[in-house]
Amino acid sequence: MKLTPSLLLGRFQRRYKRFFSDVKNIDGKSLTIHCSNTGSMKNCLVENSNCWYSLSDNPKRKLPGTLELVTNKYGNLAGINTNKANYLVKEAIEANLIPDLVGYETLRTEVKYGVENSRIDLLLEDPKKGQCYVEVKSVTLEESKGLVMFPDAVTSRGTKHLRELINVVQQGQRAMLFFCVQVNQAKRMEVADKIDPQYAQTLIDALNAGVEVIAWRAKLSDTEIVLECAIPCLQDLPMPEREG
Image 1 (cartoon, rainbow, N blue to C red):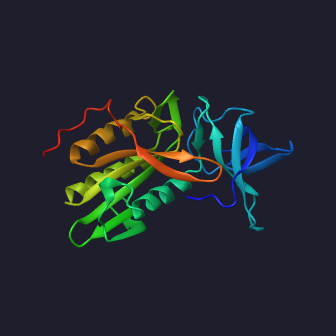
Image 2: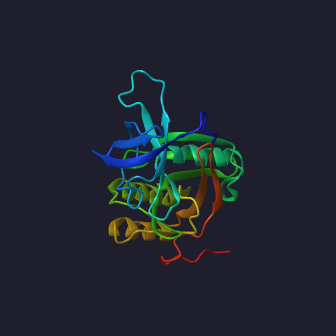
């Protein structure tokens, strides 16, 4: 994903009322911009650290820009605009960069499905391979150097999505949970069971039901964000044995 124009450098000041962030631009002027991340942003909120933001030319917008990248507690860049995750995964699938998801004829987004009135992020379809339901989660929490975790706050919505994926598998279709890790230098992905025990248990249930789980790390800069490589995922969870 090319970022045109390039993101603007600033200094992060604070985030408040969930959707508001204050930054200072390179001239020292204070700006209030939008924060699209609804999580806790744990370990991402470092006062006076470098951050990067985009500006909009839409005169109807309440806030002039959006916070995109921050420098986290460990000095790594974190992409906190969760809206980017679906685009990154879609772009990588369409470029045949994800070996687990190649060979599908069509890809649709935000398709209604499930028994709990949900929308799947990406639906892959093929006459021979059938359907694959892909739920994308953006990961921004670096819990220790190189270790990233999800979620960073209790997520009843995320737990609901896992139940929906379990139902998809029970109906005979393929389902995948795709962790889009927007943290430079992330080495390993785990579930934050201490933050949300219910999500962690439902994730174990999903694995046992046959839901596939993968994690890919993004490479982030002020000019481009792309999925870079797969990283080890959920090694601390009891993984079911797979046939073959």
